[in-house]
Length: 248
Image (cartoon, rainbow, N blue to C red):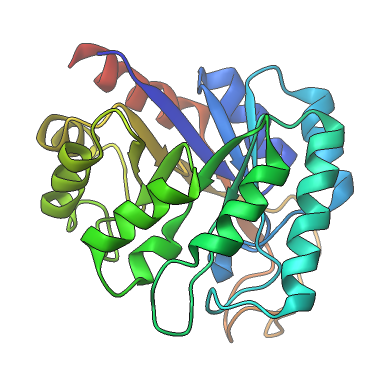
């Protein structure tokens, strides 16, 4: 199967693991707990210096909805400029109007300023009010690809819509399934939808090497969330997923 595998990462460690495993590119983010925000300048710079595979960077100034103020929009524009100066391969964006429509005008302006970088419209699409009109709006904005779970929490649940989007999009745009893709469902999603690009984290829990661990206190997230473990891209898992795709 001719495919591309994008690994969503929130650290240089995960990015390097993805590269070692044979992934085609990474989407570099921060705060995956909130669905992802733009990583720091230092993180982006380090990724560009250390990666030879494709590097796409999420441009999202905050968590929450995808309706942005003028100040937030300006932040996005500045972050895109920074990525361009560093030689980043692509950016990942998504903007909605109050009505739930794709904001074509604002998205198109960001895409124009991002060129020649590749542009992915992210899962803001899954929050839009009409998937059919939304697809045409994303295409009209000039985006190269659309990352979607088929307007469900997990891509496996959105297989039917993803398949329709791939059919309707044709050669006009790449439809890339993402969210909840794993070893257990990658073959089903690939065979059913006919997708050629896939987005996943491929993570496992990595325990802290701290010898002293303070109990019953959390620095963030939610109560009871361990400060002494974190999720990191697992090269073995990613290799196994690549093998499944190669055998299809």
